[in-house]
Amino acid sequence: MIRFDPASFKDPAGRVFYADDHDDWIGRTLTDDAHANLQAAEREGLLSALVADGLLVESEFVRASDLGLRDPGLGPHALKQRKIPFVSYPYEWSFEMLRDAALATLAILERALGAGFVLKDATGFNILFDGVVPKLVDVPSIEPYVEGRVWAGYGQFCRSFLFPLLLAAYRDVDVQALVRGTLGEVPVGVAANLFSLRDYSHPGVLKDVILHARLERTFGRSTAAVKRETSAGAYPKALLVASVRRLRRLVEGLKRPGSPSEWSAYDSSCSYSDADRADKESFVTRALGDRRLARVVDLGCNTGAYSRIALAHAGHVVALDLDSRAIDGLYRQATRGARLSPVVASLLNPTPAMGWALEERRSLLERIPSNAFLALALIHHLRIAGGVPLAAIVTQLFAIAPEGIVEWVAKEDSQVQAMLALRPDVYDDYAWPTFEALLGEHGEVVAVHETHAGRRRLCHVRARPNRSARAVHLEA
Image 1 (cartoon, rainbow, N blue to C red):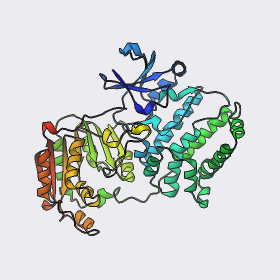
Image 2 (cartoon, helix red, strand yellow; image 1 turned 45 degrees about the vertical axis):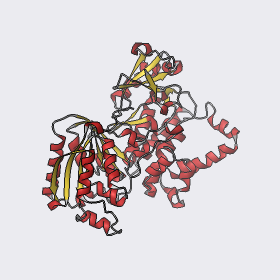
Image 3 (tube, rainbow, N blue to C red; image 1 turned 90 degrees about the vertical axis):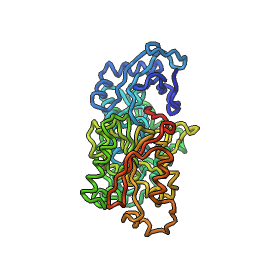
């Protein structure tokens, strides 16, 4: 029995499918043309070289019948690909992640051109982070290069990567919400309107945004102009190669403004003493124990101090925080082979299901169910800053995982006092006895450890067998 991924319906050359009895790989259908194109790329050594350099997910040509799959919708040819442990979307990537994904796309394109091939498109959704390494998963987007043809993926590359990066670098725009609102691609007109005249001197703004917007308006008025600019022979390969290298240099040179955010500097400014910090690290290590959990999700991970502890106990760790600068810090500290997926997202406003029929992109809450959660110094933010009732918070935690480590921060703590100084205290349910009782309704409190002279409590909690979380999804 197979299931087609609803996100891949737009590309008949490579529809993604899952076999119910196989969890470690996904399949992609291949039309005869796509199969021939990729076989040619393999003969040139392009595919194996991209895999070896960590730019392409491992892929194997197979016949559907060899997999024991008889569905008539598959056709005879397929690709078998290793499943990526966790799927995040471009609007959940930090600046550094988006920049690296853009550079990976350009590196693949440059390699492809050198072997006589091209990427037919360049959407951010063709890239998935394999841990902290961006890789192309849409292998059928590689096709033979046609001499003189304009690169059709340029506009898509700009909308998916370049425009958000330019806005972040030059306007200090936190682009996750913008990219999410445009389903992964910022229209050129929107980008052009967000730059001022003085921004035109910055590399990339005038050429790739302002002139691009004017050309698009011209093409919108004149079909003849489109045919003239895209006709065969209008764009020699040498010019395309030079353009790709220019874009690579441009993207490499983009830096996010250096001012730290409130939470990216939290590790150095929080109220933990060395002894309290050591106590917390020891409690988390003991609670995770000697087990090998398939997946742990760190909710409100900040720069990842406890995500790194969880890595010693889990096959994979999803590290989630609403502060993209904090995620940048975590991402840059991670080693290339780390089994870690950084995600810019918030439980107060989780990424919704989006796209066609709300099935094209899955919601965050569909993707993060895990074997265990960390919710450290998080509850008071959800309750007091977010206004979410305590009972709803506890219910949500146990919906994410059947076990976890959660930190209670009392109203007497300096961090909560600072939050209450800005608002009236209407949080009658925010009390330790209430929280303890709510945890008991869902499961058992395995262990409690006090820090900060009793103002904080670390709790190891476990759901009852009949109140377990939803099944963990590990789909690419």
